[in-house]
Length: 148
Ligand SMILES: CC(C)(COP(=O)(O)OP(=O)(O)OC[C@H]1O[C@@H](n2cnc3c(N)ncnc32)[C@H](O)[C@@H]1OP(=O)(O)O)[C@@H](O)C(=O)NCCC(=O)NCCS
Image (cartoon, rainbow, N blue to C red; front, side, top):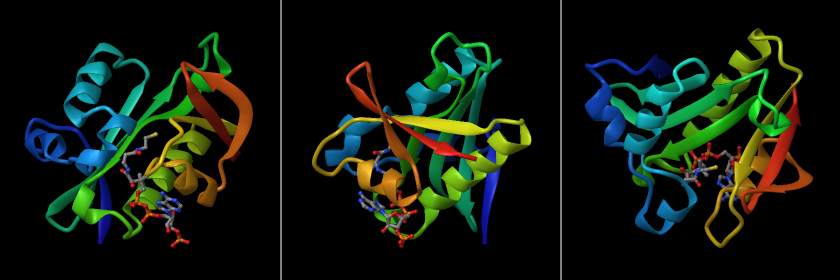
C-alpha cells in the first residue's frame, strides 16, 4: 500500500535515508539538502515522502510559486529521489502522479520539471510519464512540461 506523508520530526530520519544509487548522485541533490531548501522556501516548497508499508522509498519536492518570473518555476517538480534499491517498482510514477494531482487541485494547467541529460539520467522516465521538452535549457538542464 503506497502513501504520501508530509515531513515530520518523526519521519525525518527516514527521509534523509532515501538515497539514490551512487552513479545517480550527479542527477539530484541529497534529500538533506532539499529539506534545507524546503525550510528556506517554506512558502512555496512541497516536500513529501512516499511510503510502501513501513519503508520510506522515495522523496519528491514540488514547488508552487505562481508569481515566479520564470514560467518553469511556477508549478514544477524540484527534486525526485527514489531509493537505489527500490527503483523500477512504480514509486517514481506514484510520486509524480501525487504531485500532478496537487498541481491540478491548485488550479494549474501545466507542470514542469528540469532534468540533466546524461547516461543513467531521468530523461526516459519523464518522457514515459508524458513530459515533453519545451526546447528551453535552464541552468544547463532540459525543461520538460506536461499539460494537466
Ligand atoms: C528517475 C527515477 C525517479 C525513476 O523512478 P522509478 O521509481 O525507478 O520509476 P518507476 O518504476 O516509477 O517507472 C515508471 C515508468 O518509467 C520507466 N522508466 C523508469 N526509469 C526510466 C529511464 N531511466 N528510462 C526510461 N524509462 C524509465 C519505467 O520502466 C516505468 O515504465 P512503465 O510504467 O511502462 O512500466 C529514479 O530512477 C531516480 O530516483 N533516479 C535518480 C535521481 C534522479 O535522476 N531524479 C530525477 C531528478 S530531476
